[in-house]
Length: 362
Image 1 (cartoon, rainbow, N blue to C red):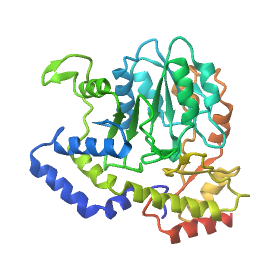
Image 2 (tube, helix red, strand yellow):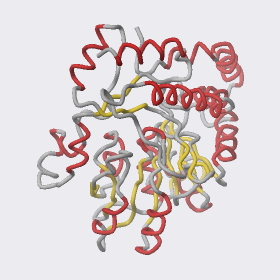
Image 3 (cartoon, rainbow, N blue to C red):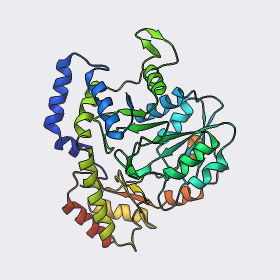
Image 4 (tube, helix red, strand yellow):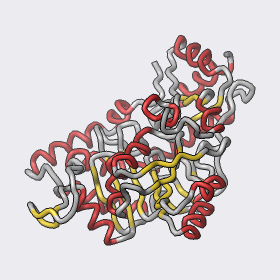
C-alpha cells in the first residue's frame, strides 16, 4: 500500500535519534517547559528568522492564543478562507471573534488578495493568510492592504514549514505566525505540537502568559490564561527533525517535480507554483474532473490518495446557516475536483514512477 502520507516511515528514518532524545528527556527530570522546549524555541526562531518562537500544545491553540495576545475577541472580525482546515476558523471563534470567509485563487488555492479590501470594515482586526499545501500567498499584495487598512497580517504556516517568499522564510512576515506540528506536517511531531513566531517582545511575553494560566510567575495570574504547553518529548523530537527539514523538503520537491513532468495533463491538472514562492509540497494537489473514479481506481491498485479538503468550512453542517448566503464560487468549484497524491520524504522514486504509470493508464 502507498498512502498519501506516512509519518511512521519518517519515524523509522529517525528512530535511533528519537529514542535517544526520549530517554534524554526521561533522565532530565524536567518534563514540562524544560530545556528541550526552550532550546527548540530558540532553534526554530533562528530557522525562521524571527526574534521569538513560543511552543504551544497544537496549531489550533497557536492561532487562538496569538489572537488573544493582540486583544482580538468579541465583536471583532478576522478575515480568512473557507478552503482550509477547520482549525483556522474554529480558533478564531474560540476567541469570540467572527470569521469572515472570502474566496481563493483558482490556480493556487490560496486567499484571493483582490477580495480582501471589500471584506474589511470597522470591526476588522486581522487577516489570517493560510499558506496552503506548501506555498505562500501573495505576501506583497496582502502586506500592502493590511498596512493601508491598519489591520494585522497573521500567517498560518501549518502546511508550509521552511517555505520561502522572495528568499525569506514564511512565518517572519506577519505580526505573528502559527505552525502546527501534527505528525503528517513537513515538520511533524509524534503527537500534537504547535509553535508561534513573532518579532514583538510584548507578544512573546503575553503569549507565554496565556499558554500557562496567565502566569507572570507561578501561581500569579495576571491575564486570561489556559494550559497549552508544548511537551518536552515532542520538543526533543522536533529538534531532531528541524535539522533535516530543508533536506526533507528538497525530497518533496523532487517528487513533485517528477509528478509534474510525467503525469498526463489530459487526466490531471498539476499544481502551479507561484512566482517568488518556494514550494515545499506538504500536499501535491491536482485537479481531476473524474476524481471519485480515479480515487477508486488508485485504491484498487494499492494507492491511497487524499482530498484536502472535501467540503469547505462554510458548507459543513455546523456552519451552513451562518454562511448560507456566502458566494465562494471558486472554493466550491475546486472542492469537488481536488485530489492529493502521495508525497512524503521517504516515498521512493520507484513508487512515484509506479503511481504515475498507473494514473497515466486511467
